[in-house]
Image (cartoon, rainbow, N blue to C red):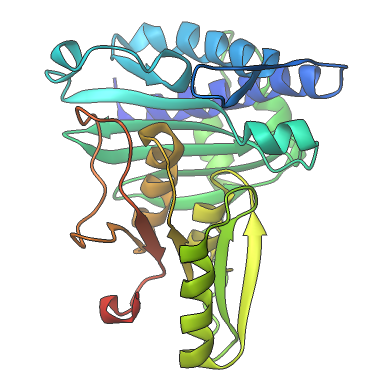
Length: 287
């Protein structure tokens, strides 16, 4: 199947999963905890089930946060795979602040090729395919079309309609504005505080924005933030879709120690500390 078919399906599935998430979000849901003490809700589980069921038609292996225990001996031969986070930002979901997303990425030879991030509470969609650009969509008519059951009489040219109604990223390329850092809303750290202080000494006035889930990647890709440093634990499903979107606009998503892009389907699915920088940002200015 073509990249366009993969993209359209990923978009449709993200919105279908987002609707299921919202059904739970607007209910009196309970919170459980996984073995690593991270929270999980019925919304995580329902979204996972929907995405897995829909993407299986492509016969491409799937790696999901809710199914991340697949042995490396099985995964290491996968040169192409879906990496998904059915509900990124479960802590934000529990806080009911709307900053949670559905993340779907297609990874080829360890590199993100296609990325979709959907924000159910705001009905905003980000998507990208390498070589064709990254986009943002917040059009209720198109979103409504995408809500229909996947595979049921897809409207001819639907992807063209989506593209025509989307805004190409970045949307803000202002020069000389306040240097802006975006960071995690729920995972602050001493390293982040030191990083912010260093930038204040370099730039004078610095704006810091807290945001949940993969929204931080989108903010850099849009041009709303200059840099997103991450000094904490993340997994591959937290970053694959955001990296696809950021890199497609010319931003960089780099390992802080090796200065090379994050890679995927590793034996250890945990990411190193990384930094997301806007296009043209100097590497020597990181630390």
